Length: 80
Image (cartoon, rainbow, N blue to C red; front, top):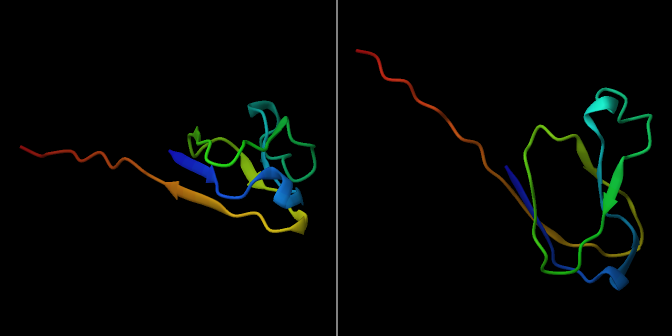
């Protein structure tokens, strides 16, 4: 699971955002345009699972700051 929280307001930079690709374009995400680009307001959390194809887009001007944290669940098995 990934959590992304923008720390900059959207008027502090141009371009940027987080792009997401649909399951259908898996493998083509470097060629195909993203299915959606999200630019949530400062302080708004986005949560998504790690297997979703995503990328941060380049900032054209200004500065974009984000807090990003990723978590993985490790399942442990016990042996008898």
